[in-house]
Length: 495
Image (cartoon, rainbow, N blue to C red; front, side, top):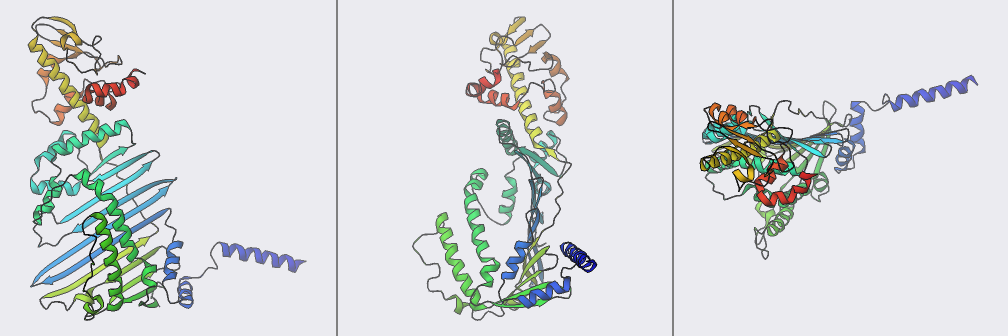
């Protein structure tokens, strides 16, 4: 009985330790087991990628490095494209980082371009964070004063700006206001700057361009994924693969791509790419893209094969890195050119960190302030114009004082009092709530206004009389859209 009990306890402890991973392969054993069970293909890498568990966290990095000296002039180009993702409480946070470091010999005054955006899911809404440091650098180099004027007007001093989008009427109006500000900031200078320096010219409408290109971008991405795929490469008829265990017990697969395999891949890619371009309308549909071209013969004098190095840790399964080194392929291509580095790398990891900015310029608030400013300036213009047309003193309803007033304001509750020295404005919206926190002494406001128009101080001063509790961008939409806007939302306002 004691032996049975002891055996049972031993089995329980053994099972528990195994479940805790204490009897699992160590680093060296895990690597050796992959070598022993290898079937000659890259299927084990696809299986490892599946086991990495990228559902909760992931980081995907694409890197290109080119370091070349030509006729005594050295040029170094680096491109990094990174996507990070974290899922927490069922909500996703995603970061997109794209950075290009250009050679010093390029004519651009800004040698590093960085596009960095973070999207954070917030239930039914999304927070978009955008880093504007590179745009500041380009604006400085090009002396675009309008850009900095708008930043100063709305006190945007941080490296990041944030816009919260919940797909409602308020967001639509906010986007309209931001589009207006972007036009004022002369934002197209960013693309113009890049194109002009490279001697290019392009007529474009950014919104239309991005909308039309979205489908083609997705199709192009799918096309590239087909050919940069472990299964596609590993199952190719002409593939040669070697497998080894590194000193740190990682597994490294080396895939040799000679001129025969490369010709086969390029031929398939050429026809798929041609079909893609035909769909875009960029190529005619009745031609052979490789007519009279024998790729295998063309590549037969390729100086060296291309080697694809794939590395991962079979014990931790926390990363996989694919490196394609083109150095041997190009190092003897030109006697006047020396290549120090020419490689492309893809790395995926199942852990990452996303630093969501705590300091940022709030674009929703900026849009609201811009709407308030537009509304106040219209009110001031309406009052001032009619004051000079009317000489008598007294208290008037809005419909009497300004017969052509916007339907946003209540025609009879709104009153204007004119004396020999002052104009007092007491406006109400159509749903009978006050526009201002208290009746506005327009005369005193004009007399005490800061001298510098459109400065931060001036904007805060002008919009201060508005009642924050009653102002809304929905009302602003009604004001800006006139009678049509009022007809669309009058029922909502009167509820």
